[in-house]
Length: 469
Ligand SMILES: [Zn+2]
Image 1: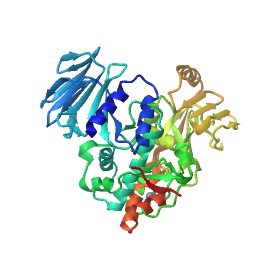
Image 2 (image 1 turned 60 degrees about the vertical axis):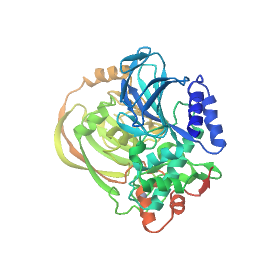
Image 3 (image 1 turned 180 degrees about the vertical axis):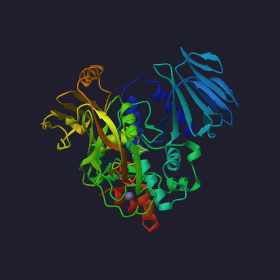
Image 4 (image 1 turned 90 degrees about the horizontal axis):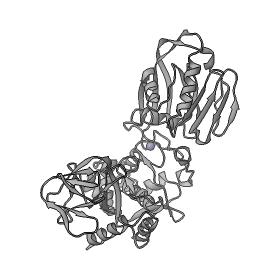
C-alpha cells in the first residue's frame, strides 16, 4: 500500500510541468509527518545503463500500468533521439519507471543494488539521468555505510544517523525546486544503496527514527566532516553561513586518529598543472605563504608569488584546485624542499612585500604589482601589474579576451635564471571542511562514554534533538 502511495506520488510530482507545486507537495508531505521518501540523484549524463532485479524487473511508462518490459533478465537501456531503446527496441517516452515485480527486492543499476524505484529521465542533450525514489529511513541506512565504518561505537553511529537525517530533511524542506533532493556523492552525503547497509548501521537509524537537530525550533544545516584536526571551523568561513550553532569548538576527541595530522608534498609541476586545469596559467612558483588565518587556525588567505605576479586565494579554493583528497584540509603550514633554476622574465614583479587584501578591497600596492581588486568572498581576483592583468574568477575560467591580453604582454621583456623551490611540503591537520560534527571526534566521544545527544550538542552549539513523526 505504501509503495503504491509512493508510486502515485512519484507520478504526480514527475509529470506535472515545472513549477513549485513539486516542492510544495514534498513540503506538505513533510508537514503531514515526515517525508516518506527522498529523491536521490544517482547518475547523470549517461548514454546507457543496465537494469536487473532478481525478483523480475518491470519497466513502465510514466502513467501507464502496462509494462514496456518485464522479466528476470538484465536490460540495457540506451538513450535514443526521441526516447529510449530497451534492448534495441525503440520506446518513445521521456521517462521510464524501473522497479522489481514484488516492490521489495532491490533493483540493480549497473550491477549495484538499490531499494525503492528508479526513474530514468532523458535530459535536453539526450542523455540519461537516474533518480532513486527511496524510503527515507532506507536512504539513511544507505548513507551511513558511505560515511562511517559499521564497527564504530553505537552512540557515534546514532549521532551520524541524526546528523544525516537532519541534513537530508533540511535539503528536502528548504532547497529550491529541483527534480531530485540530494546527490549520492559527497556533494551532499555519500549514498551507496543496499551495499552500504549493515545491521549495526540500520540499528543506529532505527533507534533514532524521526530524530532531527533543531536550533530555536528550526532544522539546522547539519554539516559534518571526517576529522577536524583539533578545532572545528565556523560555518561562515566555508559556506558563508555564520549560524550560531556552527560557531566552531575545540576538539580533543579526535586526537591520535589517522588524519589528525598529515604531510603532503607538491612539486612545482603538481601545482601548476592543477591551476592549468582551470585555465589559470601561473609561472614558476617562488613562494606559497598563508597570510591570513581564521579563528580556527585554517588558512583564510593564501599568497602564491610566482614569476608572473601574485595570487591571493582562500584556503578552501586552494583545496578545490589541488583536489580535496590531495589537500585534505585548509588547516596547514607550508615549507619547501630543494631548489630548481628557472628562467623568469620580470623578477621585479614578484617582490614579496605586499600585505594581503580583504574581500571587497580595492587597494593599490607598491609598484610594480599595481592595483589589486578582490571581489566578495575572494571568488574573483583582479591583479593589474605594470606588465599584465590577471583575472582569476573561480566560478568560471577567465575569458579568451583576458588570455589574449596576457599573451601580448608576456612576450615582452628579457630573462634571467632564478632559483625557486622544487617542492612545497604541506603539514596539515584533519580531513574535510571542518564545519559541524567531527566524525572521528564523535567516535572518540562515544568511546569515552558520551551518548549521541551529548555528542551532537558538543559539535552543534545550543541545539535540541527533536522528533518528527
Ligand atoms: Zn575533531
